[in-house]
Image (cartoon, rainbow, N blue to C red):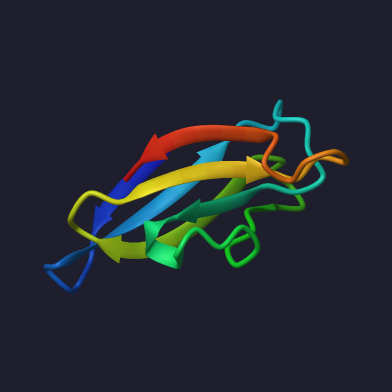
Length: 85
């Protein structure tokens, strides 16, 4: 799920990305053109009382390309789910 809210900066938007707890993974990362496709810089987290994977960012209002990725034992690019902000 992607939840957008206005930012105090009109050129940007606050975005919360959520993945359901049914996603079986030890870690999930958000990667995209906003972080130069760095697969380690934006880990998603799960709360103590909420197992939903999430991360909140302030992004450029222009369309941002991104993916969710979860490292696997064989290939760190094995599990990708495309999305857009």
